Length: 209
Image 1 (tube, rainbow, N blue to C red):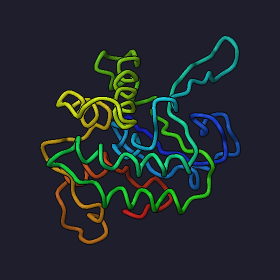
Image 2: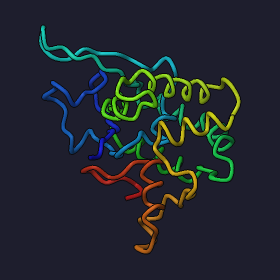
Image 3: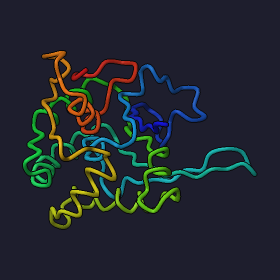
């Protein structure tokens, strides 16, 4: 069974805007999807102070979840400021300059005020500590701290970011962001890694697929 994360952008100032929100239109407000991870560049849109919690459901049947949330304009700033530290961390797997440019293009083409990564399915299942979630959150926040300028690009951090948080296979390499646009002849694992760097098309098109 696969578990998904979603990159959402709309005018709702709340994490998981797709839940209990009749104003949310998935065909317009869900920008991309990823299975079994939260893509590298989605994470780079956020910083430690962007993590929020929210409780859903009616009294007696409540559920609390966490996720990052920021404005679309700030997400663009964060992406651009992440470039050098991302490339330093990825080493021979990078650089991601072309990927960042396409992701920036996506964020400039949409009109929503807020952007969030709906990641609860991933956090609950892919925590290194099992099905509890806080282990994944700790790794996620550690990565955000690195992107904000804290710490060094250690092998442990690289593993936490690429493998545990993003779900990427770092033994394969990262293909050009034009992999789907320029050719139909590409390796399955190349496509897998592309999805875990940028995400896949959900309903609306993206600049890369």
